Amino acid sequence: MVLTPSIGYPLSFLITVSPAQLTSADIAGLLAQQTAFWFQTQGEQLHLQTLQISPLFAEAEFIAFNPPPISDCSIRLFGKPVDGALLYELGQLLANGSVLKASLLQPHPDLPPALLIQLTATLPLELQQQLYHFAAEQQIELVYLERQIKLSEPGLLVMDMDSTAITIECIDEIAALAGVGPQVAAVTARAMNGELDFAASLIARVATLKGAPQSVLQQVATDLPLMPGLVALVSRLQQQHWRVAIASGGFTYFTDVLQQRLGLNATFANVLEIENGLLTGKVSGDIVDACSKARAVTELAERYGITAEQTVAIGDGANDLPMLKTAALGVAFHAKPKVQQAVSARINRGSLLQLLYLLDLA
Image (cartoon, rainbow, N blue to C red; front, side):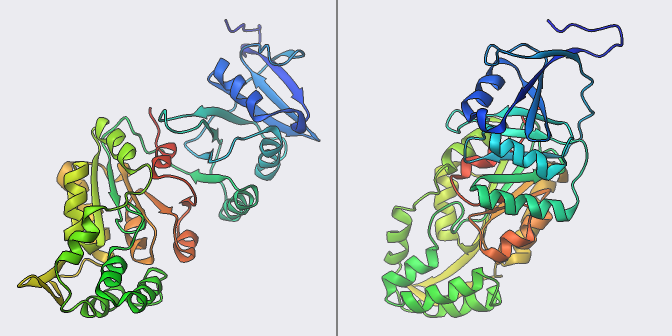
């Protein structure tokens, strides 16, 4: 029961703790008892305000509390348990004395609990950069969002394939089996870093495969190594009636396998030309490049009647950047430095399933 004093504000319990004394287990326990708490830094202390008394803390001051209005802006912390010291440093960085709302995030049973910090206003770009430096120092995943993407409403996810939906670069694997692995892998790395024009680099790499038997494609396709979390992520999105697609600068030989295995709604990729069971060293039709991948987001949203605000794209290479910037939420996943610097939402470690931390259930 929440008590309300005569001034009209609900009564809350104010808990003052030293950051070093507040463990990640304490925070998890507190949020297991109630949906949220508010916190602020004052001097060298953390002040926690809860609407219910907690047996975890022996001393709590009974005061009136008027929670500040919350905006759509938020910070999601995951990949590492959050303790009082980390919470204190975050509060200090955001603004000493400001009140922040913390609640638990666990959008899937296979994901460990994470922390959602709701803010009262947008953050300036300089402070956003400071937050990402803070996350790197703390070795924690941190994503700042200025809008909500709702899992509970129809949405669209467009994924890159190579090094995103799967853990390999298919062309490098084909090249290795064809005996031209090192030279092709070097070009792939430069293309993904944005050092080369993607279409020109693809043509050059495919040309080295001329004369290779079609069987090398089957060897790679037979055991495509899926990125950890891919199957669970796609399944969860499909349960929520989301559309899921792949837009790849790779090849249809492999996207078709993934589409069948995962029940994807659509795939976009390049067609390797094959004659008499041998690769000709050419690509058939138009090349799926960075611009094509960006158009896929728009075209699929229109096809399925999904609002632009409910579109998400995820990828790792420079040719994914237009796609990431076209979607309402573009996520750099295990990405190259150039890609990380260009987008604000980044997942640097861990599984694809962590994308669910960035989507809201309501």
